[in-house]
Image (tube, each protein chain N blue to C red):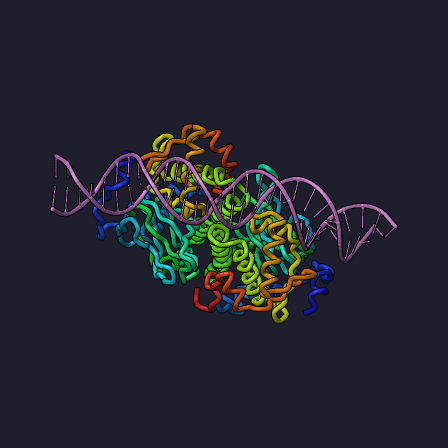
Length: 258
Length: 258
DNA sequence: CGCAGTGTTGAAGCATATCAACTTGGGTGG
DNA sequence: CCACCCAAGTTGATATGCTTCAACACTGCG
């Protein structure tokens, strides 16, 4: 897949047919086997398509959504703003991520979700999700799992923030994204499209933009990766993982009965 | 309730009768109404009691537990150890917390859980939990919710770690614990038992023990709290919340249909 | 009584923020 | 088509927060 094409061009939304949720299926099927009936149930959950342009909020803090949002194409971030106007990004989301599935039991959104690139999305009504919990226990557990992996990623970020160097933290993030994008077939060999600016990445790591810049340069200088033109290419995957102390166990990428 | 009694003395475990899970009920019922039948189903999930002494692992990293653990009494922490032997605590748990419920869909524990004080616990078999997902959709959603609030707490910690001063971060943590302990009736007015050492707290915030000590002193000097003898007393709750930028929304303490 | 764990303090050094300036490239309007 | 502008990236200098190392006080406990 061409990275530049992915960056800009999306199909015009088609309201009448069910959206293609192939990324979500790849995501879920990296953890367990889905029956055809479950796939069909999953597909029929999603009711329309929409496109959010870069910088727009997909979900607004304080809202009570009646549906949950699935990313079909593009990057998004969950974030909170502190009293003195600083932004902290608490999660990054890629195609196949059900970004506010947790709003289904949680009801109230305590944080916002912003599109970091143009995002094509589709929606699952909470009533329909409730019916899944009533009729499809196995699929329910897999949706639960989807939110639990979010939690596992949060914990990994806390470890990186608290006890690793900024260089290791950044390296870890890139390892994680490379693996997650690989699952949903959004990598091209060792390269992947990555729309975030250095300022946005600084809001992920919780550091200043100047320090972010110097941290990136340090990884570049070590010959671990190339990062130009919104594309990251991993040059030395084994050493990058080593610097990052990256162990993908927390992503639960093994197919087993759940 | 006497704090010092709570600190040391637990009833001898009684294997034959169902354990008293009143803290879990208080916890869940702070979010939604439970039917009596659901309470009964919940009670019958738990099969025996055990006591772990301080410092013991309740759950071992890399294990695949066949049951999930509920804290009846005591404090526990989830943690990971980095390559150079540093520990980062990613979550704190109190009575009424179902500490490894996420291991039910997740299967493999990617982190350890340690007892920070003597802990009285009880266990729910994963087979029994699976039956809940098959027969009790509303209770299933509430268990799901329980794990989602863990996730919301993780996100709040990420914000504190990334974009707040250490003083604000510490204040926030104390606000959070005060509220969470209040829900399960483990506060005594503005005081609560808090067994963590400064070293353990340093592993929560991801800072050195020396800096932890100075951060605590700063909160003390401002007259916000008293912290002696494993007991924290909040002296100025409004100003503590202000320093912390504490907004309990993320704990989802409103009773509504889920 | 002495020891070990915990809390506390001071001093020196490193990591990261802040402020300021400059470069680069793409987009836009005259 | 060029001039300009703006956002993003880059660099240097200075200031601050945090770590590290080292020493010492306190307390409970064997």
